[in-house]
Length: 256
Image (cartoon, rainbow, N blue to C red):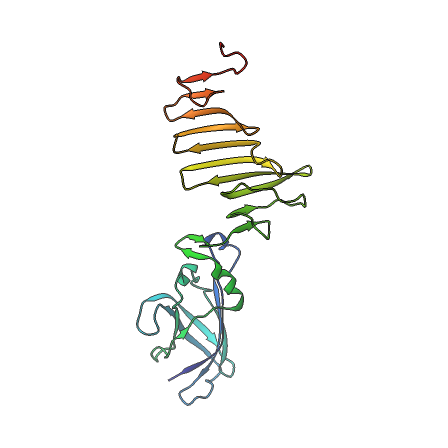
């Protein structure tokens, strides 16, 4: 009966399907193949079946691959996944075990539990669920090292950081000749949401708002409402309570 001494096992797996073209779906594996007496097997090529299970014994086979490995003094190195890619979905759970079989012998025992490599601990800050990738806490920054809101796309430059209205969830910034221009999505638990456009000094230069309590949407500039659409389909310009399909109120000449 042949035995394997594990020397090295390291994994390089992509975090999401979007990265599949950039990062190989491979597991590096190195070991020493010995005979029943504990001596290295003769230098040759051996057919080895590798399987990944969801349990240390019995369980279900989640992935498998048959490889021809060449030994030198029993030592061999193989990249698992070169024939059958190792999917990232395989590691949605932490209990994964590698089983090794060299015919005609049965599978070697015990199976080897797959563990993390050093840099893979960074990926543990993210959670996968099917094709979805998410964080359960904290904020995400794009182009910025200190995101101020849940999702913060920072601009390239050093003009400063804009102020944020309480409740801001998403903000996208862009530089525009020395000033910050940004878009913010602000939501609350009361069925209200706003899309703000502004700069560092004024978040309300432009705004699109919706309030479930009044069931209406309105548009503002210079921190002042200019147009409202009600749930009945009425449009008001200069009024927040239009009583017809289109109502225009001129504050300087109401008779018009």
